[in-house]
Image (cartoon, rainbow, N blue to C red; front, side, top):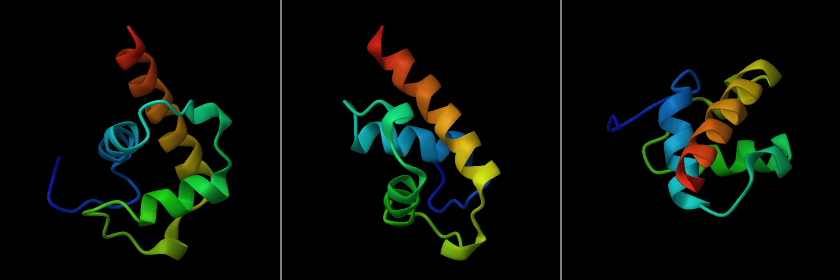
Length: 72
């Protein structure tokens, strides 16, 4: 993972979220909560107001893939 990452680093964010919340199904997380968790991640350097629904959806899908990979 790079030392810092922003909103377009979907896979890096997904890995960090899975590491921090290994038992959380990403499809059950509200975007407002996910946004808060992302901006609190160590190394996250994105502007908190620069996110949008499309980016959060892409992050959620990448997180879901990572979550499923680790369940197997």
